Length: 336
Image 1 (cartoon, helix red, strand yellow):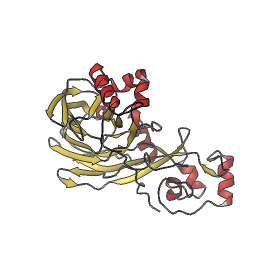
Image 2: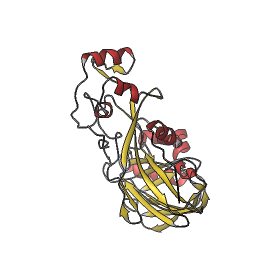
Image 3: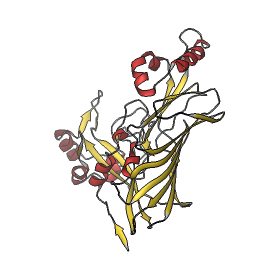
Image 4: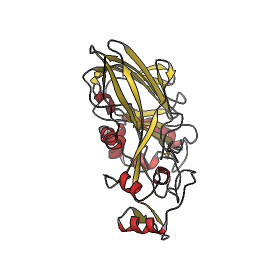
């Protein structure tokens, strides 16, 4: 016998995605994707999570256990950061991450893609479709899209109506572009048999903010609040910057991860491990996080927590990195 919860509507999917407060775009800072989620459950427990974070790859391994006496089937969501459908100079923080995959009990899991278009927090997806826009036109606007997608232009009548309704905004060169944002979600059906452990693994290349760390560290209060740099960190950072001469900086990247999705499972995360993986031994790492990290090899710091209920999402500063790290988002798989 199976208890089945079907969460099919895009509006409900979006509402659930907002249960993870850091899903929203952080402007030019790093934007965070994160863990899988669904509505709060009293049946399925996250017995274990191992999260490995580097500037190049996010890898997460879960063990779930249905502690009820009845099989449960859930619609599982993986929410992505919103991106603006209008003009962008580059696709660095937009669309879907590269290298995304899901495996369940060692086998690749297929997933679907859905999206919601929003204007000032209002869902305008249905209105855009009512005006005759295809999903591809909504997700990859015909002009100034950050993705290399060819879609049909708007008609004169569509453009006139959309301008009147505030759905289009004017650029400095008098061209009209979308005023809406697009939120993409991956979803799939997952069965949790009663009393059986289900192992889920997913990975992707994180959206990162990259470049000189000098100006960012210049605002100590902001850095302290987000990354909790200590005296040893600043001492090393200043030493590395001094090697670059006057006006020197430490090359850095920032990685964000939505961790609070762990609270949607029964009892939070019962056994949590976080691995911070450096690209080389002398990289600097700073973050705000409970617990004490242990160096388990020259490039990996690890912390373990029991009965973990994340109160905030994860922001990690990687300093003294080699070269520039950037993972351009790729176009979501929206049907043409």
